[in-house]
Image (tube, rainbow over all chains, first blue to last red):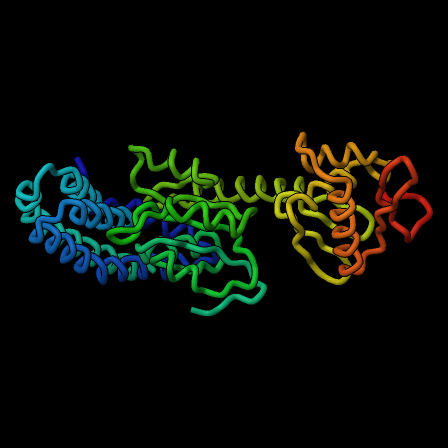
Length: 120
Length: 235
C-alpha cells in the first residue's frame, strides 16, 4: 500500500543536506512541489484532452519524478499507472483519482511542513 | 544564474527543478541547472564541471541520453551520471553505452549520490592521469591530442599525436624511420617525404610551445626525443 506521504523521504533529505541546511532544503523542495505540481497536472490534462499518447506518457513520467522527490508515493504510483495506460480513455478515468490524491498530498505536505517548522 | 570562475561546480540537465537543488544541497557543490540541452550548450563555461547529472526525459520531446556523446566529447574526464526514476526498460543500458559512467535513482538517496559521485570521480581522475604523458617540459594528453608546454597548449593532428606518443614511449631511445612510419600509417604506403613533413610539424609545435625538447635525427639510425636542458634524455 503506497502512502500519501512517505515522511521518511523528506526527513532523510533534511538530515543528509550539506552544511546543516536541511530544513531550508526541505522547505524549498516542498515549495517547488507546490509550484510545479499544478503545472504538471495541467500538462497531463492537456495531453489527455489532445489525445496525444506520447505527450501523456512524458507528462505522467515527469509528474511521477516530482512526486518521488517529496515522497508522494500514492500519487507517484498513480502517475505510473497513467504512464502505462493503453488508451487516453483509461487515463481520463484515472485523472479524477489524481485530482483527489493531489489535494490530499498537498494537504499532507502542508501539515508536514508546519510540524517541521514547529519542531525546529 | 552566475557564471562560475574557478570554483567547482556540477551541471544538472533536468527539467525537474528539485533535482539540481537536491544535488547541490547533498554535495555542497554549486550546481548549474539547465532544463534543456540548448540552454546548456549556449552557456559559457570557463572550465570543466566536477560532474554532470543528466535526466533521461527532458520536456516532451527531448531525451537526455541523446546528448551524452556531446557532453562526453566536450568533457572527456568528467563523470556523467544519469538520474532516472525509470529503473526498468533500456534507458540505463543505453545511457551507459552512450558514454555515461553511472546512474542514480529518483528520489535521490544522498548516500547513494555521494558514493557514486566519489567512485566515478576517482575513476575519471585516474583515467585522465593514465592518458597524460610527461616528457621533459611537456605534458601530452594521448586521448585529447593536447600538448602542453611552457608557453601554452596546442592541439595536434591525430597522426602527429601518434608520432609524438611513440617517441615519448621510447624514452629517448632512437626509433628507426620505418618503425615510425608503421606506427603512424600502419601498412599504408606513404612517401619518404610524408614522415619528414610530420617531423617538421611536430618540431614546429614544440618550438611554438617554448619547449626545450628536440626531435633529433641520428644519421642512418632514426629519430629520438631529447630534452636539451640536460645532457641525458629526459625520462
